[in-house]
Image 1 (cartoon, rainbow, N blue to C red):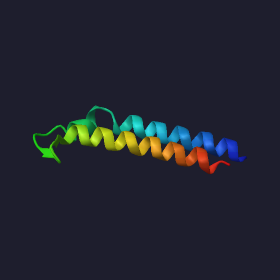
Image 2: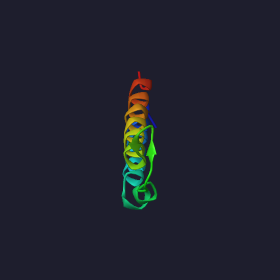
Image 3: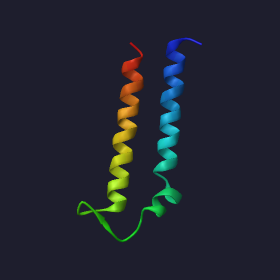
Length: 65
């Protein structure tokens, strides 16, 4: 398989994992009372996952060259 096909498959895998992580059952695990650095735990989880998804996608795309 050529490099372009692998990049597309990796991006699709990251997207699907992101959909799973940012869906109800997983989000319910972090929907608790409490703060982390003064921010609700659920918000920290969402933004950290969002940041990791973007970083992984950027890494896969840049690695292509």
